[in-house]
Image 1 (cartoon, rainbow, N blue to C red):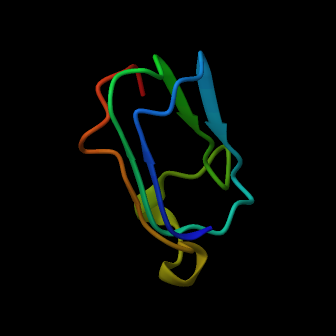
Image 2: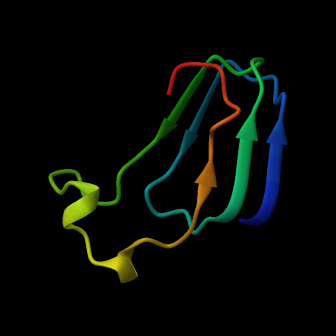
Length: 67
């Protein structure tokens, strides 16, 4: 997904797969109560990953549910 905004998306729960290619995705609002963004590597902290493994940016600063 590129240049996509989810604003007040009304679903019970939203999950973003670790394999999703994301760039400039915005998720905001309070109608979705739970948002899960899976890590690419289960046992690797983000700061230990190569910069090339980070595929994009997801802005959740306006999301008010559980992350």
